[in-house]
Image 1 (cartoon, helix red, strand yellow):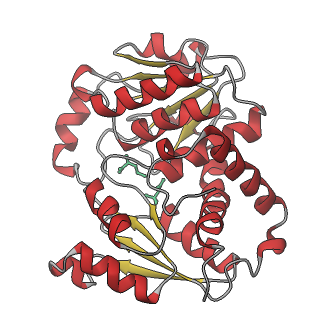
Image 2 (image 1 turned 135 degrees about the horizontal axis):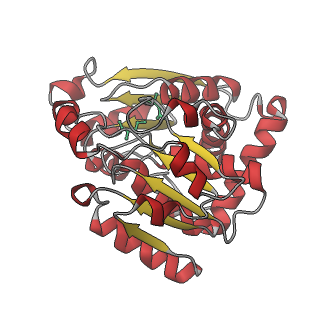
Amino acid sequence: MQHKDFIEIHDYSATEVMQLFELAKDMKASPQKYREALKGQTLAMIFEKSSTRTRVSFEVGMYQLGGHALFLSARDIQLGRGEPIVDTARVLSRYVDGIMARTFAHKTVTDLADFATVPVINGLTDLSHPCQAMTDYFTAWEKFGSLKGRRIAYIGDGNNMAHSLMFGASKVGMTIAVATPGAYAPEPTVVGEAQADADAAGTKVIVTRSIDEAVKDADIVETDVWASMGQEGEADKRRRDFSGWIVDKRVMSLASREAIFMHCLPAHRGEEVASEVIDSEQSVIFDEAENRLHIQKAIMYTLMKDRKR
Ligand code: CP
Ligand code: NVA
C-alpha cells in the first residue's frame, strides 16, 4: 500500500480498505504479535479541539505497538500563537515519526500533510472524520461479515461524520442514504465525489430530507450530534431546526430487523437519539469506541512500519 498519509477514505481503494480491516482484525485478535511493531517511534498528536476516544485510542495504540505518543494541545504549542503550519510540519518531522491532528479547518491537516516528511493522519476536521468512519464500517463488517449490497442510513446533520461515511460506503460495497433537514445537507462537493466513487463501485449515494425514506430496510442506522465542536454558539438554533430528527424506536422499526445502531460519541440522549435506542441491544456504540484502537493501530502500522529510526 503506497500512501504517505491518511487524510480521507476517498484516497484509499476498496482493496486497501479491506487490507486495513484484515490487519485490524489480526491486531485485535493477537495484539502481542505487534508489541514491538513501532518500537522506538513517536507519534505527535495535535489537538485544536477536545477529545476522549481519539486521544486515548491513539496514545494507547502507539504504546501497544511499542512506540510513544505526545499530546500537543494547539493552545500550548507555538501553532496556537501563530507559528505557520509549514514550519510546525517541518520541525515536527525532525523529531517524530508520524503526526495525528484534530483541527477546525481541513486545510490545516492537508497543509501538515503537504509539508511534513512523516505520515499525517486526520483525527477529525470540520470536513471529515475518516478514522471514525473506517471504524464504523469495520465494526459492521465484524457483525455482518460481507457488507456488499447492504445499506447504511445516516440521519441528522450533514457534517464531518456524514461526509466520511459517504466516502467509505462505496469502498465496502454499501449504499448510503443520508437524511438531513434542508439547511443541513452535506457539502455538495463531497456528495459529488462520493457519488462518482459509488457509480464506479456500482453502489448508491442517496441524499434526502426524509428520515423514513433513508432508513427503510437499512442494516446500519447512524446519527451524530446536531451541533459539532466549534458550533456551540448555534446549539439553540440547531435544537429548534432539528426538532423531530430523533432516532427513536419508530425510526429503528423501519430499518431491517437485524439493523444495528451506531453513533461515534459523544451523544446527547433525547436529542439526536433516544435512550431506548442508544442503550438497546441494537446499539454497538462501545464496540465502535473500542475498534477505534484497532483500526488506528492498523493505519499507524501501515504508514509508519518502514520508517528507519
Ligand atoms: N468519536 C470521537 O472522535 O470521539 P472523541 O471526540 O472523544 O475523540
Ligand atoms: N461531528 C462531531 C463528531 C465528534 C466526534 C464533531 O465534530 O464534534
